[in-house]
View 1 (cartoon, rainbow, N blue to C red):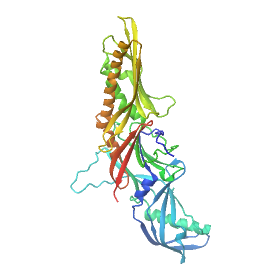
View 2: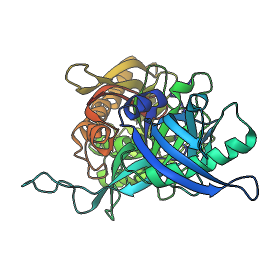
View 3: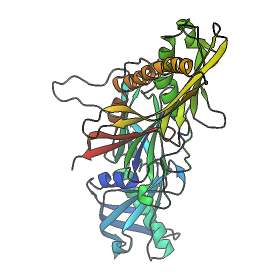
View 4: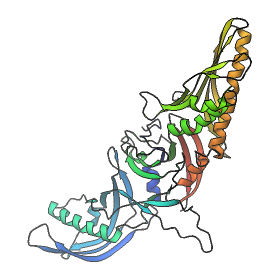
Length: 441
């Protein structure tokens, strides 16, 4: 079963929806009535056939194929009557036409309400992802207890119906999203998008559609996922990459907190950096590359400061180690503080807060001096965590491009979506937010 402890596959943002949840909305589409005569050649050389078609194509349902990729099976229920050379074809033996195709990305034509100002910024463009029934690569298939030559002919008939009567109908919508054309990238504002379907082999209805986006990464990630993103109980979720969490949310605040107590605050910017963890694809950590002298009595220094995600505790882990040579008493003192923090969401107000879930600390045996140095070590931790939360919630960090809940609610729109409510935020390795949606009927 899917667990949301998965790779980002090199994408900065991922919006996920389950197959069942999407099919519930696609089922609200109206049937398409097709009534016409189709003359075409028969699979039997020298024989021409005429199909008299009077059918209804029902709302489509997605069926994610094995593995992962852009192709998906689209099931179209079919009812009505169909005859070939005046011989009736029992449609109750066919039931469903299966179209294997992809989604296409088309620019939305936004029509504001009368008298209203256009809402998107000039640098933003909204796109629809719709089922591409007109694709030349689409494959039509039917299964029925009929002669193979008749099935081959009927496949050709339905190919014409689907391509010509449904074609690029924009009502077959599965997602809408907004991209920016800004020259300066922001960590929470996407500029390019792709998509992938990922099958849940154990529970097919839990298969995923993933809308994949880049915000700061210059190249696309992979569309091939080894496992679904959604965990049991999730129908919709948003993943923010570990890199954005560490490099764009945590790093500026760690630098700010340490610089406030450093002897040379301007040097701190080059003394702490984010880097990819060796052997851990798409996972990042931040650390210092040199000791940082502190503007405190007896001239202590920070020997180590790190921040990364602990996947076992599903928490942001902060570590600070400080040392000092107290020359007047001729001894060395060392103190360290390690704390783990989880993001909590109030179920009523959706307010996001930090919860400190675990603390470990220690130091040298010279107790009074260790306590003194420990107080220095723990001082910036509260400043750092408060700064990260403020940046995430208020979006006052220019490199982020806005508050994180704006991303959860404004970047992506699913079919018939009315309201989005943030339910929880987890840190299994990347930041994963569960959102609850309400829909129009």
